Image 1 (cartoon, helix red, strand yellow):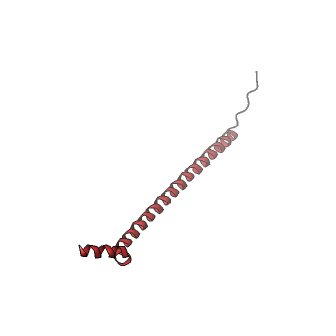
Image 2: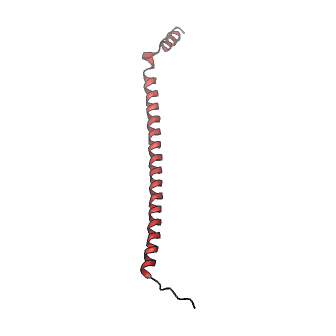
Image 3: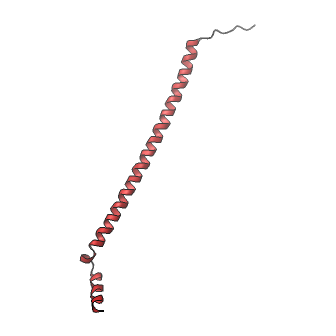
Length: 83
């Protein structure tokens, strides 16, 4: 008969704990990467919304300032007055 090896509980616990620690670190790393990706997507969405707001604000300002800037508008007004 083959000799039965003595089961070493301490070595087995150490081996399992190493595997568990590696798995925990992999999971933490994957979770942190997902959080970073979400943060990046949120920042991009916020930047896009800010740019859209600025564009809309600029359009509104341009509309409000039309009567003071454009000669073409003044010519059309003169033509409309004549009609």
